[in-house]
Image (cartoon, rainbow, N blue to C red; front, side, top):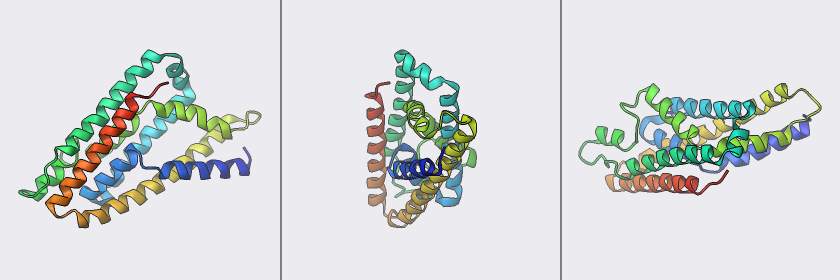
Length: 213
């Protein structure tokens, strides 16, 4: 892999990661309610899921998904249902007008008490719920790998680059979410935010249901 190929990969990943998706929205909403420091657990969960998906892609799972529409379809439905579940929980969340502390927890789906493990688990589940990630990794990464050179070192460099850029964007969204929290103190605005993010998660789930291998 040449330096030119690495730069092309870095620019492409930078632009791709900037696009708001389930992971970025998840990080943003956690930061709104729990702050940037505690949201690092969510970021770690998302990153671990991405690394697992990339490793599975190298191991050949992406090829198995492409060759087995039923397997891909089953994973797609499970992932889509989880995103829709998150959306419904967010849509129906308490706005905190009666009990702000409880409202903050109710507004963030499936985090339990907001512990580091619960936030980590939530990030992992959101990121791993999209089987299209495996197919993306199988199609995108080989474009920047020189087949005449050892592949493992090249793949390792690409994964480290991808994880670094992804983490940087997580921080951007987390800081943005924390700044938004100041404007969401009013119950009406918090309710609007909950329904907006809930609707987006439901939309992501619907898009995933329509996906094809």
